[in-house]
Length: 257
Image (cartoon, rainbow, N blue to C red):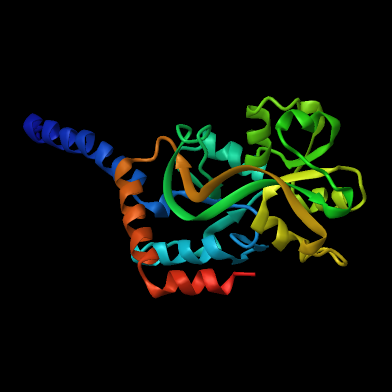
């Protein structure tokens, strides 16, 4: 009859018990285990299916290479902004780009950036001759916003009544409404608005004008607030290295209007 070595059993159990947190920690600290999300927001991130392009997409690819990650742009999920933004709040292994870093959002997520500057403005058809001196005047207009986008957040935080906002899932719907007079203004990133116009025949940036600047900020890679600081630090270091290289300027030049 074999005698069970209690000492060995205890040692083995201890090894398994104390190793488990280590494996979990390594899992959290690797970008390879994160859900990477983006939306159609040219010139920063856009495309259909897995054929993604844009300033932020190419920069993120270089970050992945710096970290020797198994991920590539084929692993990036393209979702509607509202859904992706919701998932970012709920999934502790999630990231989303390109995300404007505002005072209202700063404590909601962890951030890697900046990627590039962004200017969120109210944009109107020049022929309407709309003049806005303060946001109180918006009560006489209909403003198109993308649901959960920074434009909508800025207006709601400025106490613009929700009844004056028309929220849709993407900018293309709002451009159609603006061009047909169903809304008076669009709250959106100026550069992204100009790029979105390229998809609409007969539309051109010269037809429109900025009538009020809501905010000037920067675009970032946003992570769930439970992301370990170690991972954020390694990603930030990789981004800083990319931005110091010639590749960064080449990417910006490639997507400049």
